[in-house]
Amino acid sequence: MSPATHLDVENIRADFPILTRQVNGRPLTYLDNAATSQKPNQVIQSLVDYYERYNSNVHRGVHTLSIEATEAYEDARGKVKRFINAPSTESIIWTRNTSESLNLVAYTWAEANVSAGDEIVTTAMEHHSDIVPWQQLAMRKSATLKIIPETENGRLDMEQAADLITERTKIVATTHMSNVLGTVVDVKALADAAHAVGAVILVDGAQSVPHMPVDVQALNCDFMAFSAHKMLGPTGIGVLYGRPEILEAMPPWMFGGDMILEVSYEDASWNDLPYRFEAGTPNIADAIATGVAVDYLEALGMENVWEHEQKITEYALRRFAELETINLLGPHEIEDKGAVLSFSHDSVHSHDLGTALDQLGIAIRTGHHCAMPLIRSHDIVSAARASFYIYNTEAEVDVLIDGLKETERYFSKAGIA
Amino acid sequence: MQQGLGDLDELYQEVLLDHYRNPRNTERLDDPTSEVDAINPFCGDEIHMQIGLYGDTVASISVTGQGCSISQAAGSLLTEIVDGRTTTEARELRELFREMMTGEEVSDEVADRLEDSLALQGVRRFPVRIKCALLSWSALIDALDKVAPTKP
Ligand SMILES: Cc1ncc(COP(=O)(O)O)c(C=O)c1O
Image (cartoon, rainbow over all chains, first blue to last red; front, side, top):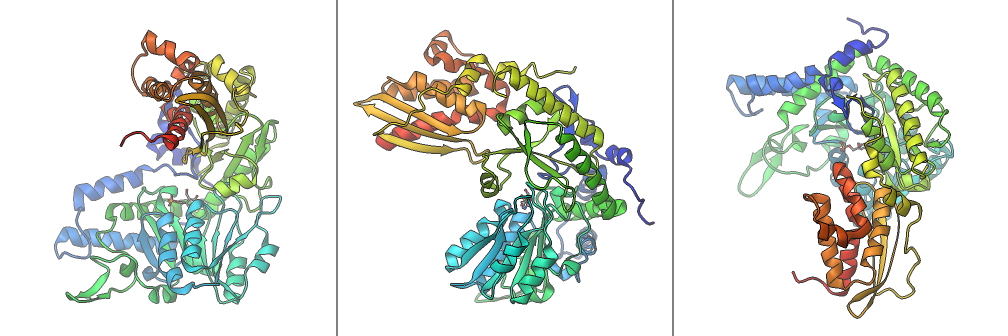
């Protein structure tokens, strides 16, 4: 069955039990999807089903339950492979989250391949998870960390990128979509630039994989990291995609059960991919549920998901223009911008905004968004952020705008707005 | 039942708003005995505190910072009750303040000692904001500990 052309948001909402919740006497308006998404019944039920019917360890039993669990677990890996068009299931490694996926690359590939005087290139828009591991690596190796800056209109400065990526560059680590600005980065162009100098490219897909069609082969990226919890799946599980030839040559980083081939008292040899990077009993239930989340998104069609979010973001950008005391961060145009709107108020701190909106049942994110350097580069200490997903509606954008206006009136009466 | 923003009045009491709009004791000390920067890693609120001790008395105090109304007003309110106290009294005030923020009803005696900082009681109903109110108080303890660490 080919997916419908548009999202049927009413039907989608019916799949998400949490969306019927009241918060402070109002219907929940959940606009914190960049932090984590809500979960549909299908995903929740798959967890219950696993624990009620076939909970068992994988890869190590001949009994029926273990066979069923192993099949479901490996099926889920296959679904993720298809979802991002990876070349093989061997290239899909289960991790705990995006952060662990990024650290895995820093502690294995980069540990083995970066040495003194080498350069690591990243961007001004990274989440702390994609800055700090590289800072630490640079310190351990006496390597240099270079940052591709943001342009005035919230894009990545691709001209500077071309200058910053040099013969000394070993790895380019970039976000695919900024969790603060919503900016979508031209990953393919950076991949080409990296490959032209013999470097590898790692993409933080935490905000792209849940929201747009992502094809790791078309993007020509060497690594892609993302988290299930931002794409309808459970917390505690993430993915690292790695180009198989590169993974094959990488040393392991955690040792234990499942990742070994043979062990004597003196030595051990390593299992095949992807198990070499999955020491110990994996997160079986959540991997299976991630497969169900992928099924859900594929049934909707990622083109449709992206189109829906573009429409709602475009509408939100229009409505935000009405708010004179609110300053939007990042691109103000919809082109190459995902469903993330960060903003600051002229005089009211984002926590005060967030507490007020919560009184109205509206959930937004406030603070530094795990991107302190980026927030500071905008001469603010904190920002508020609304981010949308498949179940959000234009009516909810209206609730947010009305809420911001009411908040403005409140703090203006209080003498601080 | 639908609520508006009226419940916020308990949080944003006039005393607090006044201290947020016009923070007290923000002039930097020329020769502080001790100073610390306190940051709340989860939200980025910052408090910079300086104290000047004369013997065992907090003879001068200065607080500046960046952050939400609760964190900044709490810092300003703190300076008013700590100024002129002995270090022991200052530590006691911190305990009383913490008990007020996390504990039960406040006795008249405690209310008297906390003076205008009592206005921060309303923060209790907004648990995620309690850490905002406590930030400057932990900065104070850090600043005091730098001079004379409490016994382990
Ligand atoms: C762009 C980006 N990178 C990395 C992360 C970290 O994801 P996780 O906390 O699941 O490891 C996030 C999520 O907050 C993100 O938005």
